[in-house]
Image 1: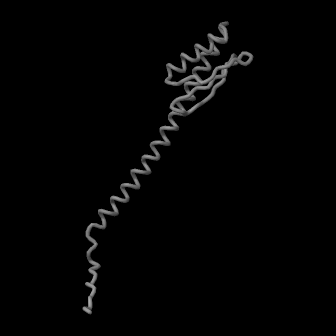
Image 2: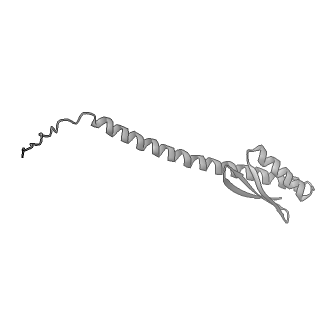
Length: 116
């Protein structure tokens, strides 16, 4: 039976290690930046929904204070929300206040406005 000898291992053959490490680091960095971008997008959508809801509530409350019906006030609020890139999810009149909820890219926000 022949005897096999293992070749000696050359530990000086680390060529390319820096390339592999840099590629791994770059992949991790790109992944973290993608996650941060998604989180920022959600935050921006929530803020846009809040601004649209606030403006819609004020516009609708102004119309309501001018003496129009609740349906017309909600129509004014809906138009204002749409002008701001949002969808009006709900609109209700409670006493002299107008309560609305707006949605932008899956993020919702609510607002309430009425006379001072």
